[in-house]
Image (cartoon, rainbow, N blue to C red; front, top):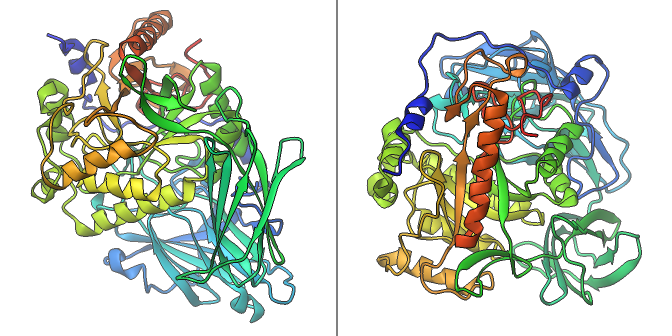
Length: 635
C-alpha cells in the first residue's frame, strides 16, 4: 500500500486545552516597537507605478471597539463614537502585537479608526487621492463626517478622491470596520477565531498601507505592461483621465535609453492609449539574472516611473513528448516552498520592508527558486522585491466560503487517491464544497479578476492557482476560462490537490503521505462533456503550447510538512505537522532526502514541487525557518 498510515495518524490535529501563546517577535518588530516615532512600512507602496508626491499615513491612529447586535449591516451607516479607547499602530491589525492593542474583533462588534490628516499643498488642477491598500473585511470611510464610500474585500485595494473635501478644510478621517471571520463566507484564507493546527489567528481592520497621492487633473489611472520576448516588443496600455499624448521611454539598468514612443489616446468606455515599442534582442529575465528595464511614462504633467522584464512562461513538450513548464522556452524545474505570509508580531502584515526581503533572500539561499504564495495576496512591494531578486511566484487566490468539511476536504482525499477526481464542482456540489453562498462566489470572482489584472505586470508571477483542496471551489472550468481571458501569458493551475476537473494548464497533486513518485494526469486521453470540453480544448492554443488534449504539466503542488519544534522560537509548546523527529539532525536528514527524491522526479517528467513550508506559523512547526525568523532550521 502506497499510503503511510503512521504519518496520517500523526497528522491528525491533537485536541488540547486552549494554550496561552508565547509572544514571538522578529528583529524588525523589536526595532519598530522600540521607537514610538518610527513610521512603519514608510516606503513607496507601489514601486511599479510610482509618482513623487506620496505621503504614507501609517503610524499612530485612535481606535475604539463598539458592540453592535447587527454589526453585519450596521457597519455601513453606524455613527462614530464620541470617545476613542486608545491608540493603534496602523497598518497592523488590532490582533497583532505590533498594533499596540492586542484585542480580537468579534463578529458582533465594529472597529472604528480615527486620525487627523495633514492636507498637502496642491497646485492648480491637482487632485489628491486617498489610498487604502488593504482592509479586512468590510469598511465605510468618512472624511469630515462625509461618507467617501464603502468597500468589501480584504485583498483588494481601493481609493477615493478627497480633493474637494480637503479644499473645504476637512481633515478628520474615520473608518468603520466589520469582519465576521469564519462566521461569514467572505474571503479570509487561513484566518480563524478558533485558531489551531493549520488555522491561524484571525485579524481585522487596516492591514496594509494607507497613503495620499497627488496627481494632475489629467493623469494615468492604470497601466498594463506586456513584454513579448519572442517578438522583442513592448506593449504599454494606459487608461487615462483627460486627452494628452502618452510618451513611453525605456531605459536599461545603466540608465541609457533603448526605446521610446508617443501615442494619442482613443475614446471608448474609458480613454485609453496603447504604445508599441520594439527592442532588438531584449535581455531575458531569469531567476539567476533578474534583469529589469526601467520605464518612464509621461502624460501631460503626469509622470510615472515603472519597469518591465522580458521572459516567457509556457507549457511545451520536450524532446520526449512530455509536457513541461518552460521558462523562455526551455524546460525549467520549479523548486518551491509554500509561503503563508504570516508574522508572529504583525500577522498578515510584515513588520518591515526589510523583513520581506529577508524571507525572499532566505528562499534563494536555501536553494529554491520559487514560492507558492498560499491563499493570500501580498503588498505590492513584496512582488517588486521578487521581481528584482529573481524569485518566481505561483500566486494563489484567497479562499473563503462556508467552513470546509474535514472529511470531504481532507480525510477522504488523504485516504483514497481515487477520490481526487470523484466530485464535480457544479451547482449540485456547491453546498458540499462550501460555495453555496452566491455573494461568496461573486466576491471570489471579483477578487480573482482584480488580483490578476493588478498583478499581471510583475514578471516574477509565473502561474495562477485558483482553488486549493476544494475550499470554496466552484465551476473551476469557467473560472479557468476567465483567468485565461484576463491573462493569456501565464499557465493556470485550476484545482491544487484534488477534485480536479481536467481543466487548466497544470495538474497539481498534494502528496504528504504517499511514496515520492509521479502521479499521472487522470484526464489524459479522456474527453469531457459539455462546456468543460470546450474550455479544455482552448488550452492547446495558448502559451505557445503544442499539446494533445489533456497534456498538462505535472507538479506536486504540496509535499513535505516535516516537523521540528524549536523550543525558544516556537509559539506553542505543542506542534502540528505531518511527521516529527527525535533530533534536529534527524529532521534535517529527512527533509534533505525528501527534497532529493523530488528532484529526481524531473527525469520522470515532473515540472516542479512545492515543499511545505517556508516558515513555522503559530502551531505549525514544519517550516524551514522558525516563526520569528531568528533560526534557519535547514542548513
